[in-house]
Structure formats: structure tokens, C-alpha cells
Length: 497
Image (tube, rainbow, N blue to C red; front, side):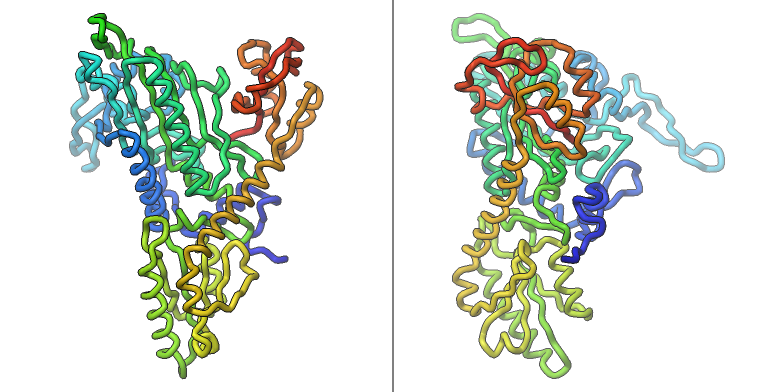
């Protein structure tokens, strides 16, 4: 069957993704190099993500705050090891005035006494605030989230996946006991996992990261990741148990119930607009964008088919239908319906709805009006064309959208399950990662042994992703494929973005 996008996913995955972005009008490169302009339709989706997540955060006892965009250089120097990974990406403010120079061009004037870093992440400035807020165990826990933007100077950018400026949320919590902090870490991991499944219809893998993939200074790092349609892993959310490491560097101390002074136990976790990349890459097909109804900014597009004789009749029917459907509530929002009344060929109107990923397309000819019905096309099956009575559409609309949501999720689950393979020898492991798009690999491997795996993985362009909980609970002891030593641990390896 001829597809709308050429090349297809299988032919050139990178070009296919760029075509989806361009045709769906999601974002574009901005005049500021390495940054993007996010267009209204996708800002609406980000806002819905914020709404649903913010509700979950507040249900679990958290609050929102805002901390400065600019961070003193000395704050980052306290945590040099933590900052080392993204230090080359930091944008630095050195002056605070402009003046007219030669040829009336503006040039920097007053140099700052201490350089300021444009927020690459907010740990240092948030922990500094906490140090002032905490004196006693009664001041804990502190459970604060920030919705913000960050800057990490990227030289090789891709829209939504990696740009110099991006949107995110970051939680930083402080606790009086290790048990409470660990509980917080795992609780929020589950919040992320449920959101991905229930709203984005993405079947994720959410387990502990291996030591080499652990967040700097963290005791344990857990991530929510998914397999993309080119079999690469995309890390979308992380949750970290930080122990007392950051509390020591920032002097977050409190007096416990016994009157003794000790350092707080901290956690952090975040998600960014990279999540939108994952949404596109998981569900879209060779006919452009596919969106799950629960996170789609538009649920229905109505396409009137008119001529000079029936235009008023058809349009009146379409606007009456829109008014009826607009009043229906779906997933805590009102159904969002749009009518394409543009003066273009009807086929172009149809493909406009398809490429934007709108879940339901309703075609209205005069023959539909005569039967008080609509021709209904589901985006996940654009060759479907069901004649549905108008009254039945209204009464079953929520069920139809839920069916589409479930179908999209089931399709993604099927792809994920088909692309995780078990390997039990090093030779098979090497051969596997010589393939162009190798599946995820599950194998016996000891995460704590330093066995020179790093060079091999680098050569194969593979990374260790997780230590899966359920695969390791009842494992019998077998042989690590890298070291030949006995282990009961399994690890998932893959290529990754």
C-alpha cells in the first residue's frame, strides 16, 4: 500500500521522524541556534501532561515552587563531580549591561563579579534554600516541584529529543529518614509509570539503572524508558534516591527526635519535553502522526463535503453536530472538535486530519445528513469507514475513544514484547549487536563487577539499561556472559538515544 511518508520508518527512520514533525506542524527550529519553537498544538499537549501530572503530584502531598533561572558558579563548584557530566553544556552569563560600541553595535559592558550559570538543573540552588529552611525533624519532609525550562548547550540537536533549551519538571525532596526517602523514590517512579501507560499509551520498562548509568552522586537511580520503533531505548523519566550525598555538600542538617544533628536524606526526579519525542516515536506510522485520545489536543475533525447547492445545509449540520459533541466530557476535559471548512479539495482536508494525528475523522456528505449519521474514520485504521447514526455516535463516543486508546496501547505492547530477546552467550551477544536495529537483550550479567565491559559495549554501540526487578526476584544462579562468574542478576542491554 502506498504510504504518505517517503522514506518510510524502515527505510530511513531519522528522515521519517523529521517528516512527521514537519507535516504535523509540531515545532520548528528557532532563530536561536540549537533551540526550538514549539507550536500551539503541541504546547496544548504539554499543558495536558502538566495538568494530569500536577494533579498526581499534589495528591501525593507535593507543592509547586519556583527557583531562580541563574545559578552562581560557586554553587556548582560545591558539587563538581555531579556537574562534570553536563559542565561542557553550561551557558554562562558574564556581563549584565550592553553599550554602544563601534558602528553603533551593542557590546557587553559591566562584567559580573561572579559568573552566573543559566539553569542546567536546579539541585544546587534548591538544596541551598532547603539548608536555610530546615532546622528540626519537624521541618521535614520538604516535597517541592518546579515546572521550568533549562539550558544545556547541545551541538547535535533534534527537535524534542535534544535541544539546548527544553521544558521540564523537577522534584527535589528532603526527608528525616532513609526509609521515607526510599519510599518517596519508588512511589514517584510508579506515578510516572502509570501516567505513561494510562495517558500516553506507552508500555514502559521501569527498573533500576546499572551502576555505570547511575545519576552522579545518587545511591540508586531508577528510570522509566520505552522501546522506540527503531529498537532504541528512550529514557523519559528518572527517579533518584540520593542518600545524604547532596545534603552533605549543601549542609542540609536537622536535629532528630533524639536531639542529635544529622544530614537529611534527599531524592530527585524529573521529566522533560523529551516525553513528546517518545510519544511520536512510539505510535506514529508511515501516514504521519498517531496520538492516543487521552493526550490528543483535538479529538475530532469534521470534514464537510459541500457544493454550491448544499453548502448551507451541510455546514449547519456540521456545526450542530460540533455543538453536541463539544458538550461531552472525556478524560476530565471537554471533547475538542474542529471543523475544516477550508476551500481545498476534500481529500486534502482528510489528510490534514490524518497527518495531525486526530483520533476521529467525521466525513459529512449530503447522504449522511439524510440518514442523520456520519461516516467515521479512525486514525489508527484510515481505511475504515463506518456509517454511524448521529445519536449512536453521541452515546458511544467515550467508548469509541477508549477503544482507540486501548488499541494503540496494545499495539505498542505487542511491539515491545516482540523485541526483547534472551541471550545466554557472549558470542551471541556480539553477533546480535552487529545488526542494524538490534532488539533489546536480556541476559545474565553481574552489575557490580568491573570486567572491562565498557570498551566492548562502546564498540557495539550498546548500553546497559536496567536491572529488571521481576526477572531477578527468583532467578537461579547462572553464569555472567561477560565474566563466567556465578550470578543471579539479569540486565537488559540495548542501543539508546
